[in-house]
Length: 510
Image (cartoon, rainbow, N blue to C red; front, side, top):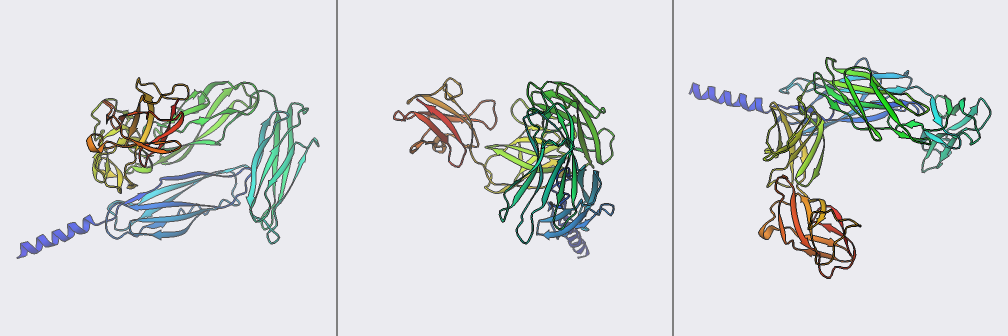
């Protein structure tokens, strides 16, 4: 009897242990959020989702950074399996610079320790320094909002040292539909090359007046420009090299922009120039967790070169994998996130595909999925067959599970269309009524016998056509080839080809 009681106690303790919550955050870093420049220091809200991938009661607590009064918690919206935390970033009155705050997320009954998320803001100096060709213009966003007789619109005046009206404020839309203002720099065609100065003075109801100094460089020839003010990468301490999104540099002047040498400030950066874009990679090496700023110098033939570009290295502590986004093309799913692996990237070029690479696997509805490629912040996998319409995707690294993201079932996706000879069909290379063409697609499932997919031809009328042949493409997991004949009575023109619930692709018939 005592033995039975002991077993019962052990059973209850095991059940209690297995019913503990496990926290996963939707982000490890939020930011860098840019404030200032020509824009006012207006507070913005940001949301963090806290997931429970375990079991049991779930009541997370949020501890703010005592050294960051600019960050406040607005509310916690607790649900059964997740919690949304709304934060407010209030930079008003702060000096230019980079600021960070570490927020601690804890759950007393969690099987794992507390987790953290870093908020980063970048306060830009309130000034404009611009290169513009004579006869051209460039706009900088200034203000936007609503104004009426109860809440007057802000007023702005401009002055220039030389008295030439090259500086103005443009207002679009005034009234209940909202307004937007921008600073316009437009040197006349006959303005000589050189450096000129001016100022924008703002008077805003219920807030502090502002003065924005403006420096204009009138120049001819190429002028280098880029949309983003910085490059940011999320890294893990001691982690591998990670590639940033392409950084585009374009010519806002005349002539041809030529990019020369790209110099990095340390061994933690690698940079190469490709047509129209800069490819940057970073390695945290021995950097501790936190935000670290590096720089790149880009030589070019533009009037404003060399270009100095800041690179934010946001180094997080090692933690379980984090899924941020998924993108599905039929049976093939791309997952982006953080800390999927700490090894070098791997691309699988042969079949069969492995269901695990090193200590990493992907599970869809609990079933292992074959993996195409694996990197620190991106992986591609093939959906296993016979899945329900709704389940979840998780990445497992060394036994540590990521957050679970929903999966809503497989939909067909056409990759492309070729003629019977394998040549892509286009407006120049068309097909005729009665010709065979091949649809290359993913997400078709079984393709033989009675389950062969119907193809819809969307022209003036909608016509369903049964394929002549459909089967997996040898050596290309997840890809199918479907052979279809163009109806003999098909009129000439562009026909949209589609599988039910899938995307559409153009087919040119003549």
